[in-house]
Image: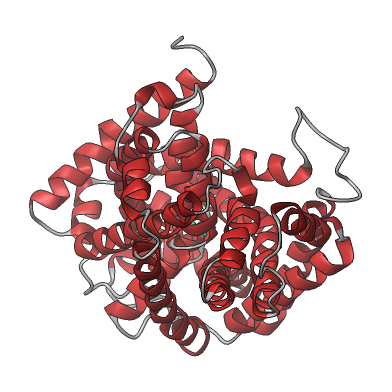
Length: 469
Ligand code: PFF
């Protein structure tokens, strides 16, 4: 019997899906905390520390933060529950988990497309994610060498330009990030993923707290706080809502296959509601705290909050170069950013590796090497976007920006819509109830996922393409 017929058997037998035991040989997290650290590690990443502050800056501050928080609470957290639920009940990599649940619900196996989209999105995301992660790692050494000390804005802008403008150097740093990511993933759920997040997540949280403590001493903490929390709706741009929604997806790692795969290693006894709320809250807190660490430093040095993607690679180093102990604050900052990026990168590689080991019976080594080779090739497109392909643009966007825009702006929200419909309308109430358990939490979740999430996503889309004016 080959793997496919094995799978078909377990799919037809819905009792197998119902059973509390994992699919034969499937790894499981050792503790609830291990899962929380891994899932929070996936959620907390470049999105929180690099992207959130700069898009908040570009979209005027407080009002955008409010929009974002609304998207997280009403759309993101219910969908995070939906995605982890699908993984845990389906007990396979995303395509097969969806297939198993479609069979359980008696609907077309085409629903597995949602799982495929997850695996492919993870693959695409990692290809450009590792490029930015590579910049972060390179910056640990730049900061440590004292290169920022006393440097002018032009000099630091020049250093960043020289880094991203050099395809060889950026490829090298990106390859290093991918190699570390693959090495962790290849070691498996317990010996690889759990150990890595067990070291990096506490390290990251500690460094973040140290940095906020530092920001409080800059004398501009109140100004940073006000920028982030006093809403001025006139500052929102036409696309702010879509950006906020896309970022809620990106930040919670929704629809990238990672959360579904991590869910498939989650034992049945763990309560989903509390766990999901903890991950959502931690992710949001880290984004807000990162903003509170970064904006006071920006204001204290008379810098521009709306500086765009270069905010933490140009603006912050300028500030590090001028402040007392700045060399060490800079090193800590970029170590934190690299940890955050790595714990997210492993969740982007895991879905494809988990699928290949399941489908082809490959070892994790073989699956990890093969997938990484593919991702590495695709990542060259993002590396070249800032140098040899800088002039090649589609609708004014380079390759890197097209990938980012397609995934966060379109694919992830659309596949979120599909997951909401699937868990809210296609899966039986009994099945979702069996996963989530009783209580007011279940009823609120079901209401949100059936009505608010689909209507919210559709309204934001129609608004974005101009249908609602
Ligand atoms: N959540 C990560 C971040 O904020 O950087 C990015 C990410 C990881 C997106 C995993 C999607 C995913 F599946």
